[in-house]
Image (cartoon, rainbow, N blue to C red):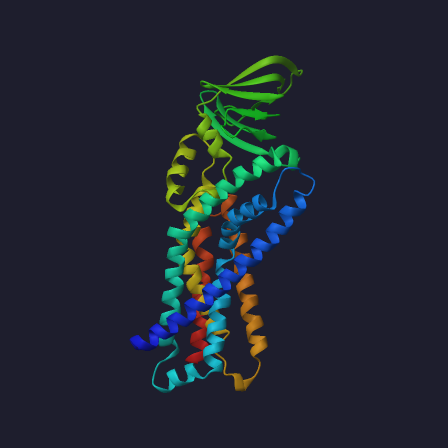
Length: 361
């Protein structure tokens, strides 16, 4: 096993390089987002560069959080390559420390970073993202004016059955929908009616659709001034229904998921986000194992560039696989736990297998 002094030295090297990569990525994200926001606000009067910089700073942590696995991968690969180039790992091997011994510090650092990113960084970035969404709405106006294809979707259960409601936009307090369309189903799952309206107001226990057009199977369209659809939703629940899971802090995800489910809305996005955050430390551990499998070749053997390219490609494949499996979980084809944990578990096993084959034959 690795000694305490050597372990602290390796841990400090890995932590320094991972943080350096992460801060570099944050800086690049901020610059790119700042330039893009300047372009979008070039024809909007009264918006200062300071406000745009503040908005970019609020948006940067959330975007950078998605790139954390790559930061761990690149930082670990850089640390392994630097230690190999300086023959420090060779000396560690010479005194009897195996690859599994000097992997303890980077694995511990990766797990600690994963825990800190979930329990500390994620809540802060989620709150900053919420603040950024409010500021962005103040600058660019309603979402319907900037993205004509954007839609607000809502599903509810009530005494009349189930209904799926889509709208061009929803008020921030959840009390009104713009250009809504409701698809009403009975308790037996049979389609009953489609309601199109200019707007919908959430009253006590009902949605009031204004200037509504009712389409029912086998009947002529009917136009009415008001149409009432029963609901058990509150304005707060409607407002939360339009919040993306990425905007909810880790500590609030389970509470929001329970509220969403009790209101008859689809909670799978919040469940998947919660499980993905729980699996993040294991995903970071997998990135360290992948980095080690592609970075421990001695420089005098050559082929370093090919090995580094292979490590980056493996990390990219893992990222794509995580997104694809997450989409399957979002569609309900896989459970949230399987969709969140399986990429990290499989990647950890493959990384450990590659190291076993490389180091122990």
